[in-house]
Amino acid sequence: MKILTIVGARPQFIKAAVVSRVLRKEHEEIIVHTGQHYDYNMSDVFFKELDIPSPDYNLGISGGTHGKMTGEMIIAIEDVVLKEKPDAVLLYGDTNSTMAGALAAVKQHIPVVHVEAGNRLGTLTNPEEVNRIVTDHVSSLKLCCTESALKFLAKEGIADNAYLVGDPMYDAFKYYSEKVGDSIPEDLIRLDGEKTSIPEEFYYMTCHRQENTGNDDVLTEILDAMESLDAKCIYPVHPRNRQRVQRLIDDKKYKNIIVCDPVGYLMSVYLVNHSKKIVTDSGGLQREAFFAEKQCVTIFDYIVWPETMIDNRNQLAKPDKNDILDKLSKPQEIKENHAFGDGHSAQKILERINEYI
Image (cartoon, rainbow, N blue to C red):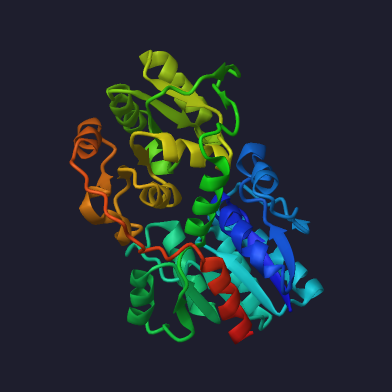
């Protein structure tokens, strides 16, 4: 069987790493990288360090409006589909690459397999929500990470061929946590290009969403909160936000925040596992905090993963200094929880593909 896997953004690379490892034991896999994340530190490095085979196709499509990017991807992916004639197209998550792959495949009557199906925020103001809904509604096989995702699909009347397989992100986090252990995988490089050491105690923050980083006042509130913490905060900066963050750091004379270049996935795993607490606006990192049994504050208006919200393990906060600090100070109770599966979702994904295709 020939499977065409389409990736384009960091979380998709991570999931593809564990699924490709089992998929290629039985089937031919063709990997298409749309190019949606184009910076070296945000893309190529993941294929290398996670031991993912190099893409068979790199479409080099990034930037522009959602419509422009998605339209160009559909055209380019369709060309690959017509050339390769796969038995199925395998998609992950909710990016423009995901929806473009789904539309290109279904128009050519190629079965679409969607991993991470059924996640919902409940608002169409979020571009990824549109991508999720469209992809799920044209998918032949819908593979869900959690019980709540299955329930959302049932509410929309598309629970046929929908199955709970667990989260391949959990597979990856377990696997690479064991691989990394207590060894620091790479140097931490400040924005000025100099190496810096990792403090014994630190908070780990990622912050990339436009609503949190596209305005000086909003981003200042978040940085003010990090400056007020009782330990240093490590903040790898997305390339898109580098100029604004550096200017605010210089203007405000922040001393408690270590702003640095983007880190590879193995380094991020290390930082998650060794941090005191985590602040993020990333759907992926809030899950990894849950996997690592770390308290997390998510700067976002909507619940992305309901399973992470128990016992104050993950709390939503406004981009407001006092709200962020208040949520970080809340008591937290850690209990063993397997809401995201048993760490063997990749094998279950393979089994469902084998049964359906």
